[in-house]
Image (tube, rainbow, N blue to C red):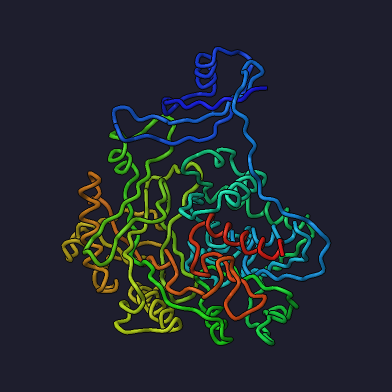
Length: 510
């Protein structure tokens, strides 16, 4: 059996038969199998948009072909007695727990929210009635914040190739479409994610792991720089090692950890609002046409130097998606975005955020605790302005003119909009930068001014970062690990999951 790698330019609506015909003509063979290794859209020339496809062909007719031996993440198993507690069931927590359980440890996951089905019902009720559930919302519950997102599986993190392969293959085993292993910009969609996180939980439990829902971490017992046990709303649990994968919305957990001497520092982060456009505007701007056969919906990634001091960029772009009320706590008003796998909605949305340091935001040097409080006050101020969970909003044109004039604002946001001078609600330090950035975006994409800005986007990244070793162990503690977005070192599904895996492997390989 010989193996050959080939690259093709193919129409956006190419079929499997078309691909096989190209392979047969190129190699002059009949008996073969073909596997796509990479697939990316080339839209640089709107008159000739096509897929760039790399394939691996296997055939007995190929002589002296390339030999491919894929590397895999090896998790050695041995019988162990240590009990490990993992707090949080998002990507970082679940993948750390899976690796540790596969390696023979006795692992218990503590999740403050409910299972994904009960969580989904609470979110649906919130969007219908405005009744907020502090236990189950877009931030907390099985699968973490990523469960209700676009489910992007891209990452700029370096040196995680083995971890990434393990993550993607694990997702496929849990029901994800196989294309995530070869698409240049793969995504799962919230509908797939809701099934996948449940299947991951089943796999973890089948290995002997335990997961306890509706169990909130309230305290830790520390002796001689070592975690002895964790205190929760459902009792105490002994821990030979504690992995914290709380996400960056768990403010009360950060405050508890700081009280126990866990070292944090402030860092640059990004805040702003969410942009929303009719999806057709984005399609035409990117493709030159309203639809493209074989492609779901057009995406964009935009950056701007803005005012020269605060870079402005789009983040978490959701093609054909929905803007959602992402408050983690009652009496705060935050927005985020999500998409279904089909990306078939009428609107496109993305964060429009500016980078800033908490010191500049506060106008003075602040501690990590102060940084959380400053951000919390802005989240509460948006709630106070709207008197609830309606999203303060204005058109992009009005934001640039700093004058409200357009009253008809179309949006996917389920709880409604309230017209607002966002330039007065957002931190004054970032408004000029956002205005410069949006003007730049309008020059780059035709029709971009025909959109709106809504709400407060404060969960792009964390304003605080735990002080830890590269593989997750917290400085000054023997058996405390902090991973994922809550640590301040990861962002997104892949980098968070990889962070959890690296930390887990650091004790597996001891």
